[in-house]
Length: 410
Image (cartoon, rainbow, N blue to C red; front, side):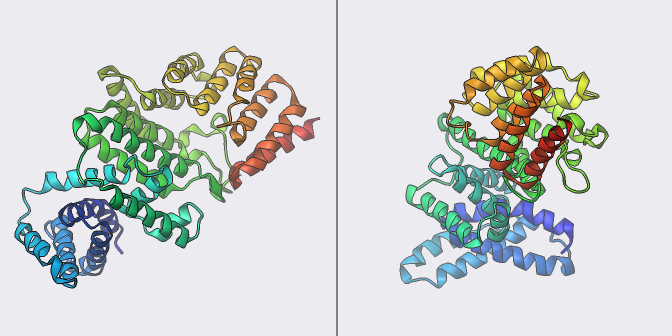
């Protein structure tokens, strides 16, 4: 299939699904109808050319599939059918642009409803809004397709049983719901940028999908500075992706990356967004993380990195978030400014935090700081401990290589 048609369908599918679900109120049936419409488009558009209004074309086809579905049910549904048919849109659709965009955002908000667990919200978001198949999502998270199908089905049932309304939440609830939306997108991006398991460091489809969805949220909620901050953070982080591995897929740490491979267009966009956003309102965690990423990206080389400014930003971030990963990164910044011994002291305080004491990154950071402090034997021990705890093969290989390299020096 033409790559342009594929991208267009991926962009339009959540908008059309939102429209159909809002009108008919049956999530699974609406999803099936939209899938059939999308299949029809993949078969017809390459030969007939794009319709004048592709979204209207898809929606009309999906509406026909839904009315066929309703007609096949018992007589008790006939009154619903009559009401739906009376409200069916005309072929013009010139006044529906705003509604269609609102439907895409409404679908995203629904999938990220706080009543769903994070894993269910991520899976359902990728399925309904991201346009990924169940098989693709299962492969991305390295679980059997049947397992992922059950997870998505449970999420759909949770929405049905909780009677989640398909609409943007009212202003007094929107901030709470939006935090869930942004958090899910943040998790999707992180899983794509650094895969928690598997043979590859990146899952580009996940990180790019998170960026695409973040653009939608920012466009439709331009007054929310944290939405802009999250998009800037994603762009500034993803800009380094090309330099993070060599031709063999081996991990290259930030300090050793070829910065000529960094995506300067993304960096410029991310810097512009965060520079415009920071002065406009209350500063949140995503904005601060984006500012830190911008400092790294704008440094000509590792020695030019403004670590004192990064340390100050992490200090602000720690006041906003009781997140052990933030405290871990703060310890690194302290070590870079005040020396590894002070950073190691901060790591000792993290060892009692059950949320991170078994995480490979705590051992990896400790190993790095011990290496900087000249304690080679202890560094080797913790590099090996970190390698044993990570499920990512590229990260495991890098950590073992670091341990082997240091061992050969002693």
